[in-house]
Length: 376
Image 1 (cartoon, rainbow, N blue to C red):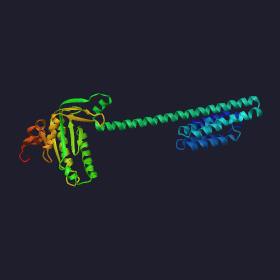
Image 2 (tube, rainbow, N blue to C red):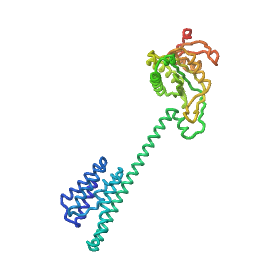
Image 3 (cartoon, rainbow, N blue to C red):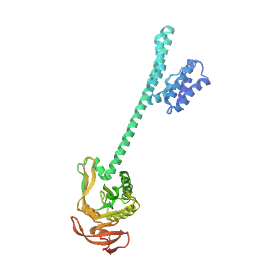
Image 4 (tube, one colour):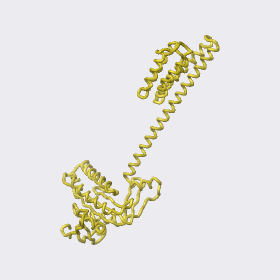
């Protein structure tokens, strides 16, 4: 609409330069304005069509139009869209050809006053067209910068997602701040190890694709459970899964959250089949106590845990019972008022000697501790 108004005003103001404009003259100008509505979809055809209409307009004795007025929008859009050769050709035709004609013929054919007026008009026209091209270049540069900015933001988002897949968010923030050594001591967390029973044997008889698919489906479900219970997945090692509660952000109910996770993992595993098609079973071990946590490595770095609590949780799993959740006495003491346990009795644990352990049966509900003999 702005272009239509500008063309109409230009024709009306220049009425003393030629025949009085009629409806046909205004119609040609408004046609150029209407074509501008299609410029984003077809920038080059709109520019060429607008130029053709202006050439046709100039065949009549209508008031002269600065070419930059009717061509401004289409010319700037075509230049910004990358059609710079065509845009320059249009500028040279409407802005350069009058100067060439003036240099060759005007001094001999026209009085000095008329020649000067035509020269000023041609120079003004060329200056306006050049200004339109500069506008188009500014738009093109802005679009290029916006595109680069969007690509940069997308790449930063992608890098952020990848980083958060490796590190907890608070730890990732510290890493981005170039903290030299990221290490923390936590006085009390709960650590869980889960391992698939007989998975190696069934994997030896299956294709690699099937093995990876089974592990991916199950561990993806475990990841969802970890997020649901607000726990931190530490790592997977083969068909083993490690998760911890109470870090990197301490929480008072870490033992309860891990217990809920363990019960949900056992139920989830029963809904999956191993590579041989048999129902999966997990062996889970849990311990509660102090750990040291930090980031190691500079390439393929990882957030890991160290300490006796980690080793003991691992032993609880490796010395556990198929399909059961074995916990240490210190984990049991934190959960005994809310969950049902079965006392397994003292067992010999590698590197730890004789330990009293418990099997988590279910909950949360009123405590019930059964004597164990059967689960040895």
